[in-house]
Length: 174
Ligand code: SF4
Ligand code: SF4
Image (cartoon, rainbow, N blue to C red; front, side, top):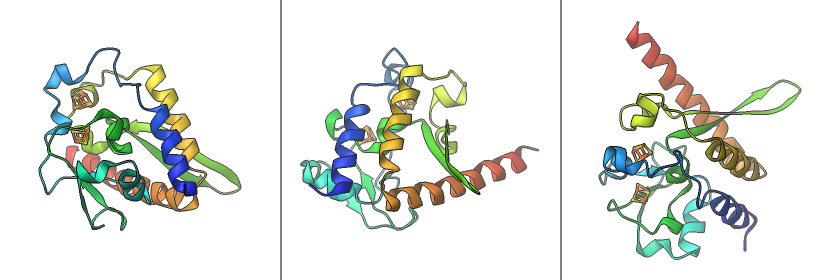
């Protein structure tokens, strides 16, 4: 198993059972985050498509070549999936692990609502808050993935992109 595959296996396992709320949050909203279309896929991390294919997800999902996702693939589903095969993006929604650098200091990891979730997810839109356990598992899973330099570079770039969306939204709301 490649080093990235091993990290994904461990990160997925950490996020297998943890959920944003103590109840099934899909019952609040009719699973809105699963109602995308073929043009709106879930962003995959570097090497994640290969990992998903290695665990048999290639038959369940379509993968679009990297455009608009820092060169990484996007996963498209039909709105239903085996929970054990969900990609990282679905396991962590509506949060995103924002990773930033500080001169002479370790990488800084903060968990924030993904700005793309605000229009979709009632947890984010109403600021309901997520469970401590969800945050802890997401933090642990991200720390694992940050052992890989390619994934680290991706998270740094994506954090910059999402911060730009936040800044633009704040400007528009002024
Ligand atoms: S949109 Fe939010 S509340 Fe609804 S299922 Fe997805 S994560 Fe849960
Ligand atoms: S892969 Fe599964 S969890 Fe993710 S959006 Fe599709 S149906 Fe929902």
